[in-house]
Length: 258
Image 1 (cartoon, rainbow, N blue to C red):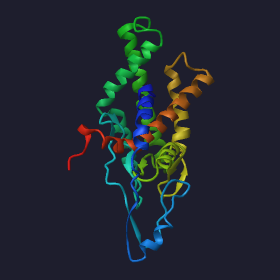
Image 2: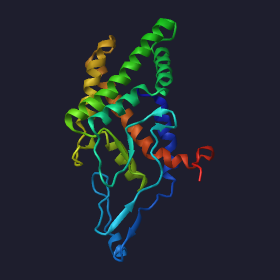
Image 3: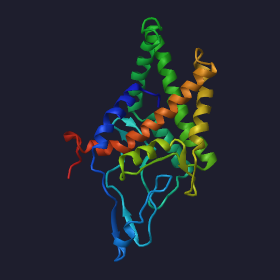
Image 4: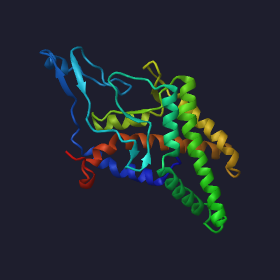
C-alpha cells in the first residue's frame, strides 16, 4: 500500500495508549510443576516465546482484524500460532488478491492519488481530472504489483510466509521491536525463522518495475527513497496491527460486545 503520512500520525498517536496498557501476562495452564517452571519462561531473540515442558500458553483472545481501523485491507495479518501451519501457494495468492482488490482500496487509493497530485504542484497544474487519472493509475499499480510480488510470487518461489503474526501479549517495547523487525525476519514454510527475502528483495523488484511509469523518478536516489518508504510503511503497518486491538478496547463505540 502506498506510504501515507496519515498512517505515521496514527501510529504515533496510538503508542502512548498502547504503552499505558497494563501488559497482559502470559496465561499459564500447567500441571503441579507450573510454579517452578514459570520463571524459566523467556522471550528469545526472534521475539517468540520458549515453552517449558508441561506448560500450555494461552494467547490473547483479541481477534486480529483483516482491516486496520475497520477500513485498510490487511489480510496478511494473523494471530500468533503455537503450532505453525504454513500457507499453500493458493492461499498466498488469495492474500495478495484481497489486499489488492478489497473494496476500500478503491477509495483509499483515490485519496492518496489526490494527495500526491496536490503535493506535486497542484490539481490544475498537474492536468486536473485527466492528471488525477494518471496519479490514480500509478497508485493502483503500485498497490497491486507490490501485493502480488511480496505476498504471493516471491513467497511461493522462496517458500516463505508473507504473514505478520501478532503477539498480542508481552512488554510494550518488546512487542514494538518484534513488529518492526518482521520486515527483516519471517518464517519459512517449514516453520523455521529466516531472512525475509520476499520483503527486502521483493520491494526492490517492485520499485524497479514501477519505475517504468514514474518518468520523473528514475534516479538511483529517488528509487532508494521509494524503497525505504515502502519498507517503513510495512513496518508501521505491523506496529498498527500489533497494537490496534489493544487500543480499540479503550474506545467506547469500538469495544467488542460481550
